[in-house]
Length: 258
Image (cartoon, rainbow, N blue to C red; front, side):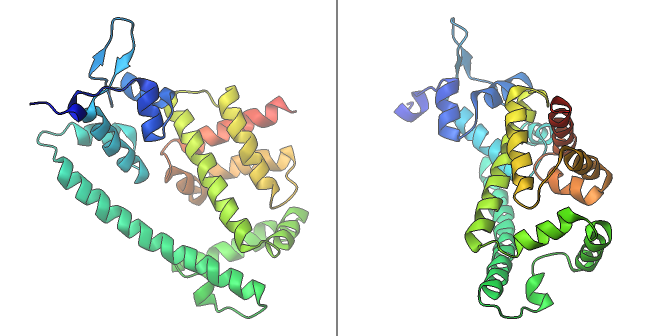
C-alpha cells in the first residue's frame, strides 16, 4: 500500500525550493538525463516523486564532493546501486572533509588571535592544515612575482587589518559566488549572459577588498587562473570546467568595460 509520502508529487519550483537549487538546474539535469521527472503532465509541467527527491539528494551529495555530472550519472545508473551504501560513503567522505576544514578554521582562529593580541605565531601554527611541500614555494613565489607592485603592498596592508568577522564573511561570500557560478555553468548559461555577469561582478568586487583592481589587473588574473595549474585546481574542486568558465566570464566583464 502506498503511503501519502510516496503519492505526493512536486513541481519543478517546489522541488527546487525544497532542495535549494534553481529550477534552471533541474531542467538541465533533465536535459542531460541525470534527473528525469517521473511524469510530464499534459500541460508540459514536470512532476517529481519521493524517489526523484532521493536521487536528487544523491546528486547533491556527489556534487558536494566535486564529482563531475557525467560521473555522477554513471555511478547512479550502475546495476545494483545501493542507496544506503552510497550514503555511508558520503558520510565518511564528508566527515573527512569536515576534519580538514576544521583544522583550517582553527588555523584562521589562531592567526587572528595572534594578530588581535599582537603576539607571535609559529610557522607550524600559521600553516597547519596546508600541504607542507607547497607552503614555502607559495610564499616565495608571491613575494617574487608581486612583491614590487602597489597592489601587493596594498593587499598586505589591508589583510593585516582584517578581523575574524571579515575573514568569515570573505570565505562565505566567495563560496556562495563560486557555487552560483557552478549552477549557471551546469544550467548552460553563457559566460557573457546577464546572470553570469552578475556573479562575475561580485567576483570582481571580492578582489577589490584586497586591493584596487583595475581591468588590466583583472584580465591578468584571468590569464593566471589558467596558466598556473594550482589556481585552476582550486576552482576545479567546485567543478571540472569552472576555471575556463570563470575566465571566460572575467574576460567578457573586461571587454564590456573597455
